[in-house]
Image 1 (cartoon, rainbow, N blue to C red):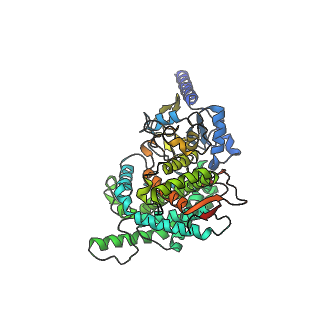
Image 2: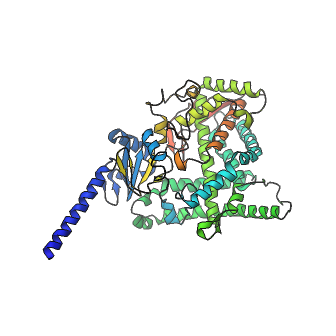
Image 3: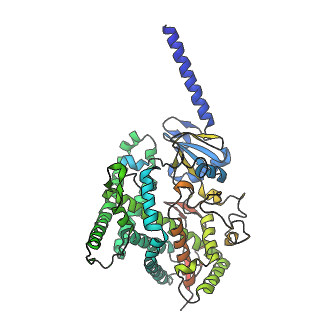
Length: 506
C-alpha cells in the first residue's frame, strides 16, 4: 500500500510539473528568471527605467514580452492589433482591473481612486462622478474664467522671461497648469506661495514613489525591513499632503454649508463649483452607505491634480519644442490664428474652428505622448493575447509611444508633420478612443481610457494657440532643441526647452 501511495504521489507531482511546464511554455517569451527574484537582468538594470530595456527585448523576442519583477509576472505588448484585441475586443473586461501598488499595502494608501480601483461598483461610482459632475461640457464651461485667468498668468510669466536669453518655459507651464487644476479641484483661487507649496508636495511625493519604491517589488517581506528608511520618508511626504489638503477640503465643507443655509460665503476667492464639492456628496453604498474619508478625498484630489498637470505641461513642452524646430509649421499655425481671431485673444470657442491647430496637437501627442505606457492592467482571469497565455493576476502594459511611431502605420513617423492629420493624410480621421482600431493611444483605450481626454485636448489647443499668438518661438543661441527623452512621472525633455521668445505685438 505504501509503495502504491508513493507511486501515486510521484505520478501526481510529475503531472503537475508537466502542466506547469506546458503553462510556462505558453507564456510570452522573455529573458531568464529565477524564483522570487525574477529576471537576472535586474542585476544590471533598474525596474524604474524599463523602457530602453524593453525596446531591446522586443527586437529579440517579438511584440509580446514577459518580465518577472520579483514575484510579479509583467507582460508588455507593443503591437497595436494585439492591444486592440486585449483592451477593446474580447479582453476588455478581463483587463479592466488594476494591480495593487506597493504603496497601498506598505504605506496604507487607499486604492479607492479612479486610476487604482478595480473594475467594479466603487470605480464606476468615482469615474461617473468625475465625468458627470466635473468634466461634462456644461461643468467645463463653468471654469472658463479660471482658464482665462491662468492664460493671463502664463502670458505674464512668459513676458517676464522673454527678456532672458533662454528661459526655462517648462517651469511656467507646470506652475500655471497646476494653478488651474488646484482651482478646479478646491474651488478657490490661491496665491502663488500656497500653490507652490502644494505643487512641491505633490512633485516630491510622485518622484519619490516612482524612483525609490521599486525596490519593494522584490521580496517585500524582506525589503520592507532593509529599506525601512524609504518607507518612513514616503510616509512623511504623505503626511505633508494631508497637512496642505485637509484645510482646503474643510473650507469647502464650510462653503457648502453656507450656501445650503442661504448665507453669503465669507471668502470672495471661492468659485461656485469644485471637484471637492462632488466628493463631499459621495456615499459608498457597498460600505454601509458611508461618506468618503478625508484620506480618500486627499487621494482623489492628488490624483486629479497629477493627472491634469504633468501630462498637460509635458505635452505643451514637446509641442512648443516642435514649433521652435519647425518654424514653417509655427507660421502656418499663426496664420490660421490670425485669420480666425484677428487681433483678439484666442477664445475657447475659436479653437474649435482651427483644424490646423488640432492637427498640431494630435501630431505632438502621436510623436511625443506624455506617458509612454498606459497605467498597468491586471488580468482578472486567464486570457490569450497573440496566441500566448496571460495568466490570471499578471500585470499587462502597452507601449504607447511605439504604437504612435510605428513605421508600418505612419509615413516617416519621426518627422513632425501636422498635415498628416488633415484630409488626405495618413492620420486623417484617426480615432483617439481606439474603438475601431488603435493607431495612437496617448490617453489609453478601452474601459480604463482617460476620463479627461476632452478637457486635456481643450487645454492643449487653448494654451498653444494663445502662446503662438503672443510670441514667435525661436531657438536661442547655444540652446538647440534636442529631442532626447527623460523618464519622470511623465516622459519629459532631457534638456529642457529654452527658447527665445519674441513678442509679436507691442
